Every structure is written in C-alpha cells, then in structure tokens.
Image 1 (spheres, rainbow, N blue to C red):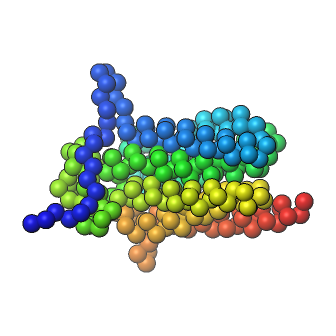
Image 2 (tube, rainbow, N blue to C red; image 1 turned 90 degrees about the horizontal axis):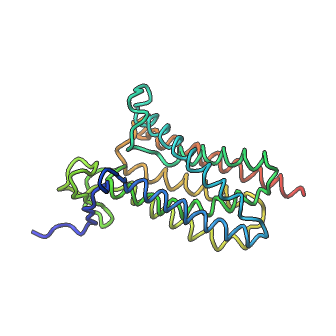
Image 3 (tube, rainbow, N blue to C red; image 1 turned 120 degrees about the vertical axis):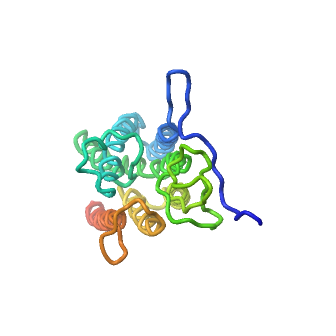
Length: 258
C-alpha cells in the first residue's frame, strides 16, 4: 500500500554538543532575527535612514518577543495559572511576541524621536524573519492539527517531536506560518517603493498576519475553543487584525495631514 505523499521530518528537536544542548527552535529564531534585521537595514538605507537603531530593535524584539509569545501561549492553552509552566522551553504563540515586540519598539521610536519609517523597515524584515524562525516549530512538531494526508501535512518521525504519534502526518501550524511569512514578505517587499506613507507597510504586515493566522487556526488543535467553533487563537488573530485596520486608518489621517 502506497504511503500518502506528505512531508517527513526526522530531525531531533535538540542538538547535543557535549554538555551544551541547543534547540532548533532557538536556532531558527536567531537566524530569522539576523536575516530580518539585514533586510530591515537595507530598507532603512534605501529611505536615507541610519540603520544603526535597528540593532537595538533586534535586541528589544528578541526579549519582548520571547516574553510575549510565551505569555500568549500560556493564555491560549489555559496554563497561565500554573507557575511551573511559565519557564517552559516549548510552547510559544508568535502573535503574542509580535504584539509585545511592536509595542516596545514603537515606544522606543517615540522616546528617541526617530522616524516612523523605521517601523516599516522593521515590519518588512519581520515578515521574512517569521518565515525562517518558524522552521523550528516544524522540526519540533509544534502547533500540529488534525491527522491529514494533505501534501503539506507533516509527519515528524523523531520520537522527541511533540506530535502524538511519529507514524502519522498532521496539519502543521508551524509550516503554514513559514509559508505565510514568506508570502507576506513576497507581497510587501516590492510595495516598499510605492507605499511611502510612514507605518503603512507596518500595518499591512500586521493585518495580513492576522488574516493568515485566523485561517490557519482552523487547522490547529493547541488552542482552547471559545464559541461558534472559534478558539482563543482566532480571537487573538481578530484582535490583531482590528488593531492593524485601525492603525492603518490612523496613519492615513496622521501623515496625510502633513
């Protein structure tokens, strides 16, 4: 009997280097931040801005992103009341990190009186960084959904992966977010020459991510259901989308008045 044509991943989620243990999740996030920062720096230089503040952005995004992603995961999974779960090394919801990192960076830009265009540069770099950073989730088997023989379903064959069974393929929320980030970057990178209004690209990136994550959440099983077949992941995605829409309208009025 032929096996379904699904993707197979047999990589150990961790790398043992003597006494040192490295997690693919952390490695891919670090690489994603680095490449995203390089893309953001190119954007800044194209707009005649000094890319130096983006180094600080990367540090702030890393710290706030990890904290926000872990916090939202605990909220969505119902583990927030368990203090022992707070310091876990697996289980992060990217949109939580995205929101907290965006707030921290926006506060930094305002506090330093920097150009709002830096937010667009950071957002465009973020899209590509997301695509790279989520590869670790695919290796870990995180954010899996129902069993599937869809051609993009993933079978994590390593016994340390987080999926229920290494013999079965599942919808992979991690893989779908890799594809989502790549698609958003492919769309907004060419638009950087056309949309010159400050923060417009940033709101578009956030809005597209909110839409994509809302749809992708129908294929995940790691978020408690609220009502009408919707989960806490759907709720947070809708909140992100509404915030992006309101922000885009605000930016249109704010910067058109100049």
